[in-house]
Length: 437
Image (tube, rainbow, N blue to C red; front, side):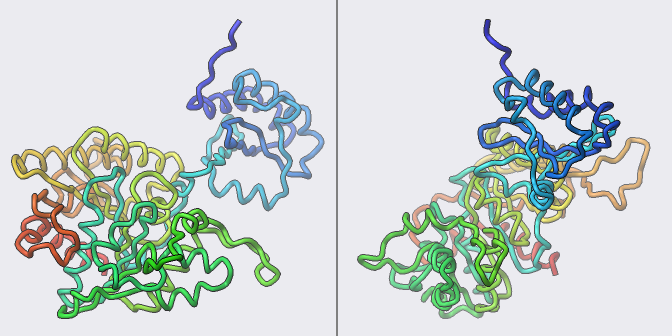
């Protein structure tokens, strides 16, 4: 007879059921907290301190049997279901846990994943001059918009640093720099060389100003994904495979340096070198860890690009629900601003009305505070009405224009085309910058 099918999505509720039934015996033994780990193969075990009291043994054995019964193939054999860890390792796991309570037992639910884990981190304190640009789906014109914005801000007199963090599909770099203008090194070079202590050397030669910006009132510096391509030195893919590594402990630095800390150190090093008024970070699309890092780990105001279609809103719902589940929604929501990209030439008013309503539904359902029907006071609550123009759900607007895809670089983009496609976006961004001061 086939055993019961146990889907992945049911694992945490089933663990909670098992703890609920074991709560009385666990509490009698003095156990008030348990850490559950769902590993890379989606199997679940319980982590406890190395020095756990002898009285816990019997309740834990009973819990292990219940887990095997409820989780099926996702469970470890009862004799392997309890993992003993040093206290410092347990504390490290708890930092990324979902917290639940079952009959007085505190549950800490931890996922060990290869990618996607960065979305669960508490965002860094926002730096007032950093802006990150993210899209859940590709093909929305994000890199083009960042390039136009960078040149606009420099033209208006600001000192701008544009960082191309879309390492798997770099586009911002080539939109702003001609091939002969690239610096010697790029982002991937810094990560590779920093791992062997040569990051500072690379940092000196990894930004360049586009030549066509020479007449601007301000300055524009680009930190590209890769440096100048030279024969015999084009091992970009080989370097890319080494970008996301944590720094291992050394005799001088006994603690490992997480990759996110390395990324922050890179951004801060670039800022120290360029001394910009504003930093624009072009992120990767999708739910990869690099995109998460650019949203969560660099302390930036985040512009989230979207189209008014069901796949886009469904994907953002998954991301927002993840933030709620891991308790970071309230720390990320004030850093967000939605962008309506590629608004069609015809029916714009109807399209924008639909976009705003669906964006409001998304934020209301996941990120805005609920105001009880009997309460009229909205002060001290993070909530906005549908038609509030300063709300995160009210979009910055970018219009689709047939002339935009024809430009090989932003220098080739006619000013009339730029105005027709990007004028509302540029004005809205200026207002957003003013709010951050």
